[in-house]
Image (cartoon, rainbow, N blue to C red):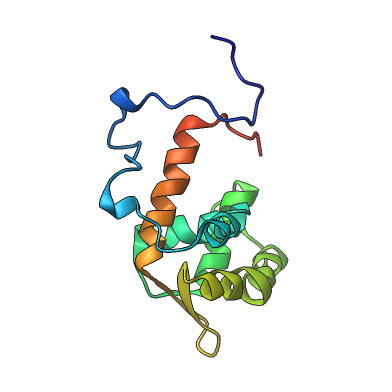
Length: 142
């Protein structure tokens, strides 16, 4: 079988799925969003990070804490090593773009006033979709 170019999806091997590779047919993986909203919700790495972090830590989670965690991931640093500008850059895009958009889709619940982020019934399913895609696609190299 020919190997796909980097960044392209491989054919999944369903019989060998493990706990790390969610079964897309499980009821926990049914995404309660229409296809376009689900695709747009996981379109950017920052949105994917928000969903995965929120699913792992459970809600509520502050926009500031999310920004720190995502900046640390993107810059490959410990949170304590981040400077104010690195935190602020991620924080601004989260509160102005990504969190309101994810809230609009129903992927998360975002309270703009308190800057708190909560999981919804779609959060886990989208996170499982992200993990499944990560398991069958080549790493992007970023």
